[in-house]
Image (cartoon, rainbow, N blue to C red; front, side, top):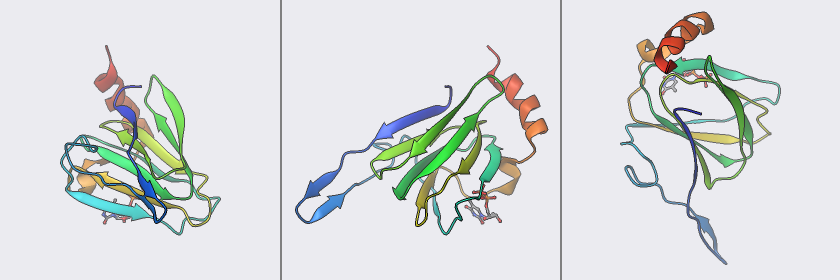
Length: 137
Ligand code: TYD
């Protein structure tokens, strides 16, 4: 699917535990300007319901598990994030919904731009019009 990628990060594990290091333009394919994390989500909650015009993001479920619906007018799939070594890259113009958070889940997100509400598309009908043009061959 366009503008989507799954990444597997190297883990440093020994008898003391595990560590994963992420650096911009290395494991993360963009410069990181913002980090946020989503937690305390009840099991029946579905959130997201938006796309971004230009933002690049990497989602990492550092604890627990969550499912992400990724959608364009032409394609859709569900990716489950359930280990801290797995990264989901989401580029521009992908509609996403997050659901099935297990209790205690922490979803870490790295982004290449600062928060800008004007850069969100939160209306699916509006998204569909713009995305049909964006993804057309
Ligand atoms: P929102 O993007 O709607 O969350 P989700 O898509 O996961 O449901 O963000 C929730 C609230 O947090 C909203 O009021 C905007 C605010 N927010 C920031 O202030 N900075 C940020 O970087 C993000 C992602 C959200």
